[in-house]
Each structure stands twice: as C-alpha cells, then as structure tokens.
Image (tube, rainbow over all chains, first blue to last red; front, side, top):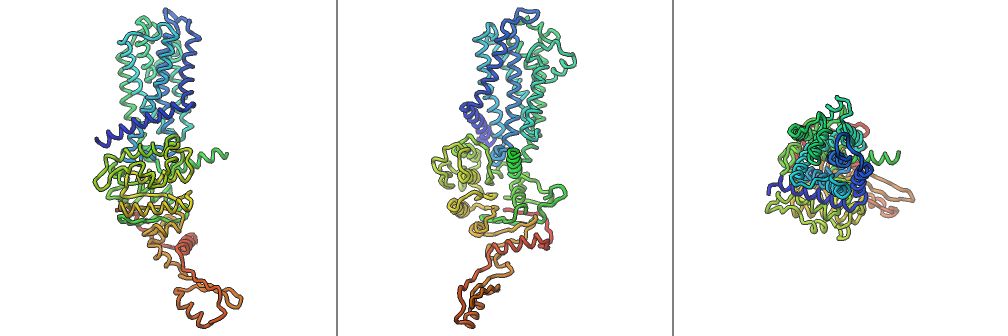
Amino acid sequence: MSPQLNAVRIGVRRGWHEFVIGLRSPQDQSFYLLMGVGALALMWFNRDEPMDGSTLTLPQVALPSLLAGIVVFSIVIGPAYALALEREDGTLLRSRIAPYGLHGYLVGVATLTLASLLPLLVILLGGSALLFDGAVPNDPGRWGLIGLALLLGILANLPLGFAIGSLVPRIQQVTTWGMLPIIVLAWISGVFGSMTGLWPWVQLLAQGFPMYWLGHLMRYGFLPEAAVVGELYGVWRIGPGIAVLAAWTVVGSALATPLVRRMVRRQSGAAVTQARDQAANQYVR
Amino acid sequence: MRYGQHDVLDGIDLDVHPSEVVVLLGPNGAGKTTTIEILEGFRRPSAGTVEVLGDDPLRAGEAWRARVGVVLQSWRDHARWTPRQLLDHLGAYYAPFATDSRPRPIPTDELHAMVGLDAGAADQRIITLSGGQRRRLDVAVGIIGRPDLLFLDEPTAGFDPHAKREFHELVHRLTDLDGTTVLLTTHDLAEAEKLADRIVILAGGRIVADGSADQLAQRSRSRAEVRWTQDGQRHVHATDDATPFVRDLLAEHPFGVADLEVRRASLEDTYLELVHAHEQGAPVRPPLSLAPEVS
C-alpha cells in the first residue's frame, strides 16, 4: 500500500477513535443532546403553527432548514475548533513528525467531524419522525435526493472550517470568526424562519453562501411540490443550488489548502511552549 | 537566524557524523532550541545552508521524515488516549518505510519495555500519567520509527536519577545497535559528560566550544586545583599539572600537610568560564556562515 493511502486509512481510524472517545464523555454527549433536543423542542412548541399560504405546519418547514443550519454549523465549527485547539496543545505537531502524519491528522479531523454529525442527525430525524406527522418523507427517491444535498453541503462547508481554524490566532477567536458569522448566516438564510420578509440585499447576500442553498435543496427534498410558494421568487432552483455548492467545494478547497500549509509551517516545539506559557499566564491573571 | 533585527543564531558551523552523540549545551536563550528546530525542518533560517541526511530539512519529503525522530516536550495532546493507542496509531505511519535493516515501526510492547513504561501506565489515559511517565512516552514516540537521526530537546527534564540512568542506557543502546545519530540538548552537565561523543557549547547564538568532554575540561584556564591545610591554615593552588606540584609540596613539608585534595578541572568549570566570558562581552570567535551539516 502506498504511504499516502496508508495515511488516509490511519486518519479515518484516528477520527473514529476520537469519536468513540467522545461518545464516552458526558460533556461531548450533552452537546449533541442539547442541540438536537433544543431543535426538536422549538418545533414541538410550534407544532400546530400553520405556515402562511399553505397547509404545511411549522415543524414540516423548519426541519429541513434546521438540518441545513446544524449541518453547516457542525461542519464548520468542528474543524475550526479542532485546528485552533490542537495546534496549541501539540497534537498537530505530534502528527506532523510522522511521515504523512499531517495528512492522517487532517483526514482524522474530517472523519471526526462527519462522525459527530451522526448522533445529531439520528436525534433530529428520528425525533421528528416520531413526534410530527408528515415531517419526514417515506419515499426512498426523496431520501436519495436528501443524501445528495447533505453530501454536497458537507463538501462545500468543510474547507471553510479548516480555513477558519488555520486563520484564527487563538482558540477564543473561533467564537468571533466562526460561531457569530454562522449564526448570522443561519438567520439570514432562513434557518430560523421565512426569509421572504428580509431586505432584498440581505436575501442576495444569503444566496452567496452555501447554507442558504443547502436549506433550499433540503426543503425541496422534504416538502411537497406546493411548498415552493414559501421559497424566494416562488421557484425551486435545483441546478443553481448544486452549482453554488459545487463552486464552494472547489473554491473553498483551493482557499483552505495554502492556509492550512501556512499554519502548519509555523508549528514547532517552541510555538507549542509559547502557547502553554500564555495559557498558564491566563490562569494566573 | 534572526527575529526582526535580533540575530539569535550567528555563525553556527556544525558537522555531525553518523552514529555520533552530540550534546548541545548553553544557557537559556543561547539558541539551542532554535538550532534543533532548524535541523528538524520546523524553522526557516534567515541565511545559510542546512543539510540533514542529505536533504534540506525544509524541502525534504516524507521519506526523510520517516528517518528522523523527534522527542517533543509534550503538553496536553492526546489527553484521552492511552500510550498504547497513541503508539499503535503513530507507529502505523512508519510501516511503509520499513527496510530489511530497519524494520519499522518498533512494536508497541517492545517500545514500552525500551522506555520503561510499565503495563499499568501503558493502558492508562495519558492525562493521568505522571510527569516522568509522560516523558518516557515522548521518548517512545521519538524512537518509534527506528530513526537514523534522533533529536531530543531536554529529554530528561523531570526525570528522577533512576529514570535518567535508564534513559542514558537507552541512548547507548540506540547508537550501538541501530547506529542512530543523536543530537540532544540538556542543562545537565553530568548527563552531557556521560552521553556525548562531542559537546557543543552555545552562548549568545554562537558556538563557543566544540569537543569531547575531556578536551573541553582541558580548555579551562585552571586545569587542576590543589587544596590542603598547613599549620591550621587552608591553602588553595591552581596548577596545570597537579602531580609534580603535590610531589614537591610533600617533599618540602613531609609533616604538617593535611586534608590534601586534588580536584581536576571539570566540564562545569569550562562551561561556566565560557558562558561568563561571553556575558562579559568577550570576543569568542569570528562569525561564520550558518552551515550545520548533519550527515
């Protein structure tokens, strides 16, 4: 086996191992539970709320949008935190010393991020299927479509997480440069409710980002044809949605690669020691 | 090598030969870690040429990485893993680089035995290990790929005397059995004396001395010190050669000389003198080009 392929396999095992460790940690589990259960509760309290101009209820419309928001959030924030944290604590350096260890490390972060999505998806989809009538489709063709949209959405957003994690100077800034933009983006992309009431320029801005398009594709997968009245301009735009997500995948990867390289080049034992000293000083202050 | 306007390394000219153990000594801030990190390929020198195992460390590929071991000062990475899991994981990267003469990686159980991680510690979460056990794990990670060249930055910091002794035996074993070339830094002069084929003393970013422990000890201004008591009074005399001096002393005063003590100049004397001279601003050596060459 080539060393590169070997490293990819090691990386997948590494990510899975970290995921299993996380499953045993109450702290990690409560994160998945809170996010999933919180979204379910939001829908439960509005379960009979009818959507304007249709026979659909709020949970039916909200589920695909929330799924899109949560997928993007996990896919971007997961690697951003991992990179910012693990280059300070020496994890990245440790892997970098082994041949192709950096490749394995990055594959590991991606694997862990994808695996961490599973419990959330199970809670949200399983919970919705049990709690709300007609929220989850029962047609395999639609599930294929939903799977494709999820895959594209993940590929389009993953490089963003790596880019943010490489750019932020300290882990605390992941909140400023990662969390806040994502929450604002979720709001203007219609994750928390209809975006037809937003200013036109905000609507245009949202359409520049993958989150809106993932939500749009997901709603197309989950909702009946007639739900199109709730969409911007009153049409399903499947081709453009796939194109935007594909474009983000390409552009994002091209953008993230040199950023990750630059960040890795700056790592050394001395850099880790410096981070440790800074962290120690923070406790003293 | 410079940071801004400040040269931290200037004129390091260093050749290291296969299966040699070279120890870098120097006060804090002398440039030891910077030198090692340049050689490891983790830092770009501002000028000069560096060649390690026939390649520029910054451009060398992953096959080069497989031949180089680095012992890091770990902090809190992989806190929730066990040493066994981490060593199995990291060792797997080296498997495609195994050769007949150098099977890679070293099996995890063998590694545990080599660095003295007992079975209990090997299956404990890393965060619960003691400082000494963690350093043993760091050393295990450094040698896991059976490296041709091993870098160790203060490997025995936090080791008790017993652990130090075991570590010294391990270094001897690596150089004897596998022909590993070792470059390490330490603040422990006794350790340097015990391990080094060659000692290089850095001060203010320059090499101020380079030689075996014996050669360096002889560089000390006073090579030996003779102390004795005569008529209740303490005497101290520094001399190049203690034997004739003592012979004359005893011949002159067959009785009355007591508490005779001869102390040879040690590596410590040379070290302290050189570092002191540097701090006084004494010119130590004209600057040379930065050309550490490790082959």
